[in-house]
Image 1 (cartoon, rainbow, N blue to C red):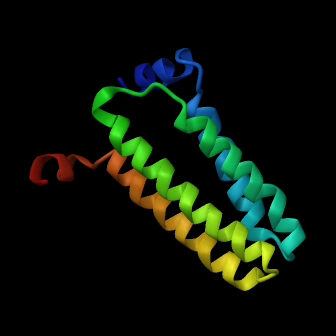
Image 2: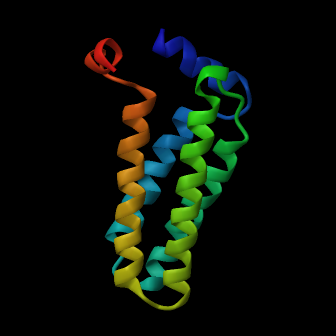
Length: 120
């Protein structure tokens, strides 16, 4: 069933699985950056991928959750960008950790465990 829903995303113009894989790579590159300049490109890539993912046509029962997650990611990345514009690599790295926390939270909410489904 999960494979069928992933295929549905691809047929709607936005390949969420592909975007998520690209986001994972861009996040890793940003997290490993040793300078402000080195971090700017993967952060810009993340921002572009999130903006593209927002345009997807998702199942109605998941649409609000997805959009909420994308919006929170966009806000966090705006703060990362502000930190980078100010030349503050440490602050940008700290804010990037918040992006990772959001990733974990929304992946869990998107795919709740069997125990979460049974007991809320």
